[in-house]
Length: 451
Image 1 (spheres, rainbow, N blue to C red):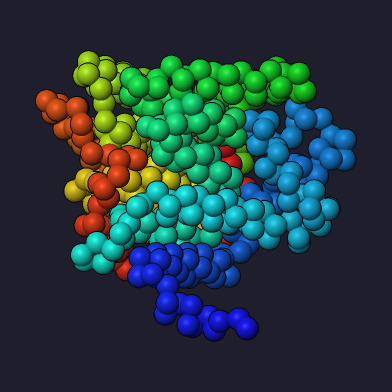
Image 2 (image 1 turned 30 degrees about the vertical axis):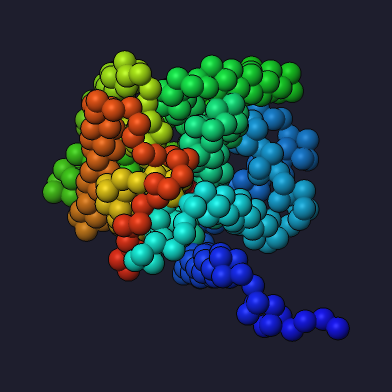
């Protein structure tokens, strides 16, 4: 005769019951926050589905015999595997492809959420609050909105977050994950210098990144040729000044004061770009800023490299600073880019202890809320350079700049200490118990800033 489940629960050892209760707590909140994210899709459905429809038509053309060189050239060729999986499962039915793509992204999110949960080592802190990283990752999708599950960007963000999580104990895995992230969308490659700061395992990390990246490049060359291998880079270099980029902000502010001087056009790059006087100058400024950021990051890297060793918390802050500077200085910026920062900060917040982590969480979540207000809610007005969304864009960018400055300051402080054993990622017993819960038109329907 089987025992009653309630009796089994009562007779379970106390630690096992506590562990089950904590896991149930996390699972329920994951369902609630993801349900809220999907619910927010209802008033935004026609705006945020544009890119998913774009993915479908690209993969559909490829499966019908179209040339690979012309299919979604703004993405690295391996990204076609991600786009193609829902198409293979649903056939040529767009109405089925869209929810299938969303379910794929949610499944990847669920797997990463589980990894974050297992990495916390959370053991009922006295104040009962979870680590900052769990708070951030739970609330990031509803804060940013259904865009989260309607873009590719969560996939490379998760791979980059996994690389940061693995860098201390499994550097070869970290290198592999960073290379796979770069194979899907190029930006995770910029994390390699930060991940390679730790001397122990550095060569294993670099070798794994080089081998994985080399295999991917050779496969792309063999299957689709050199033009398709280079197409994401040429696509990016040919683009002009995107509407939400930091470099475009002075022109938008001026345009809000002087209507009619600047306009925003939807271009062949599936993005809204600013045209008018001063655009070429701001493109030059963006290029110079990117170069200055690279020099500054190299200086930070050298500062840490002179130490006997660099702790994982410092590595995490340098990764956040690197990605923030990439976002701030580039001539393109899309709403989904905030996912890149979210995954890195979530890993830092579940496995590291730093008093700055709750503030970083609040800055990013507030930036996501303002971003969702801009896209898609007020995007039509932003395209018209209306003063209200321009002011909101300024506020969002100030938050991102503060986050970047915070990351640089924390890295500077950690690498300036005389000791080399800063608490951080993957070190048991250093989780942050002080994390706080967060406070609680037709043109925009086109595929926007997919690359």
